[in-house]
Amino acid sequence: MDSFAEGSSTFGNLVYATVVLHMLEVFMTRWFLILIIAFGLSGCGYNDFQRLDEQTKSAWSEVLNQYQRRADLVPNIVATVKGEAAFEQETLTKVIEARAKATSIQVTPETLNNPEAFKKFQAAQGELGSALSRLMVVSEQYPSLKANEGFRDLRVQLEGTENRVAVARNRYIQSVQAYNVLARSFPSNLTAMVFSYQPKPSFAVQNEAVIATPPVVDFTKK
Image (tube, rainbow, N blue to C red; front, side, top):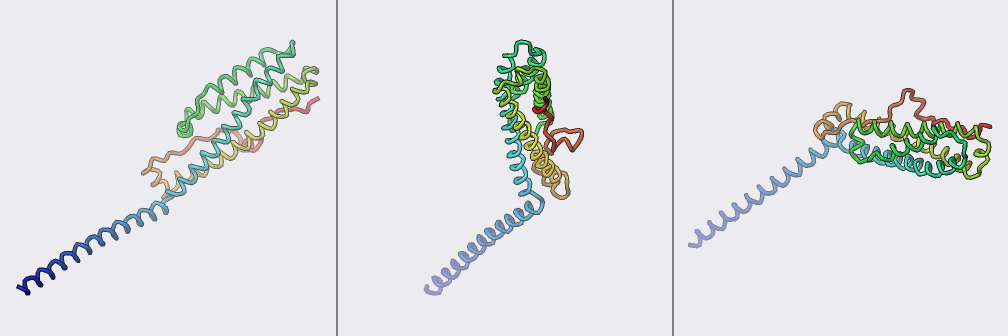
């Protein structure tokens, strides 16, 4: 009887040990696979995609902030110019219409991943920038407007904003370039395919030198 009990106890211990060893094996195998996957993702650029994606979003937010800053200046500029009775109405109307068009476009996080929506947004902002530049050139023909202290202050603010827009655009272009190079390079392009990371749209410029040069708005012309 004692031998049977002892045998049963030994058998139970063996079963218990086997179960524990199996559980440890499963546990270690899972962690090993997790580590392999982690190192694999790191080696294939997964972490770089996350980092560059955040940089791109941050740079894009700054672009939007500066465009909004410019749009906010327009109502005050228009109100001041309207005080000049003989001012060229066509130029003023184009500024008003361009601002309305630019601010009517709803920008969402998906805009960064939609080339068509991005192109539409860029075109609208370009029209507003051109209309404002034209307005400032025309304003030089009106001595009383040039002498208006409020208008002079607004011109200085616009010049500073255009400079900030140029800097923000440049940073965004650089961020997108780094992201897109990663998305198209081997072996990180395999990671991009697995996780559906598409190249991001960027500002289209005919001359790369334009990137670093703010739009010309001459506030010093006599």
